[in-house]
Image (cartoon, rainbow, N blue to C red):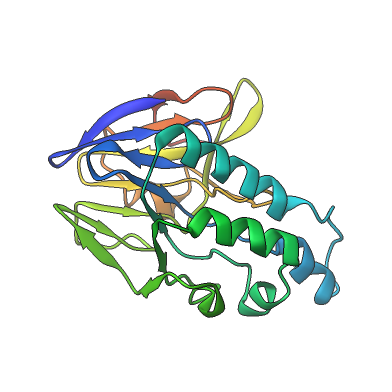
Length: 215
């Protein structure tokens, strides 16, 4: 994991792509995109193995167990669309319900979905805890934590998902399996991040390095 400050908060970027704020017993994940394979099949797109929801749930279960988080914020695009929430396998829905039990669970509205209304939890367009704002898409109002862009970089010839962070904001990687990404050198991201921004590549470890700004 990689520890860093944002405003007065001490945060940890986890190798899974989740963000941990121990002082608030808070775990933040973004862009779970549950049901992506189902949505693609339903719309006649590429066929993917239908295991991404279970794989994402397993990693989320592991992170909750490891951190002891009592509050979870899902930063939008939790489902690939609202129909995917309704089509969620019963066993997967039970697993998610078990993870939610006994925790404060906040669904932030994304551009793919407004949050799974039938699954409980609270639903917000955005929210503020202490000095930090939590929303799906980055704005000019900082300090903030957001997602949406699925940032990635190339490391040792391989694409790796990554956090992007500077003194004003954190952009989380997509947590869900089978999610694509936007290269860190894309103008949409270089325009948002300060010149000294870091990228934290995820995988087996959380590896910080200067944010790549060239393809």
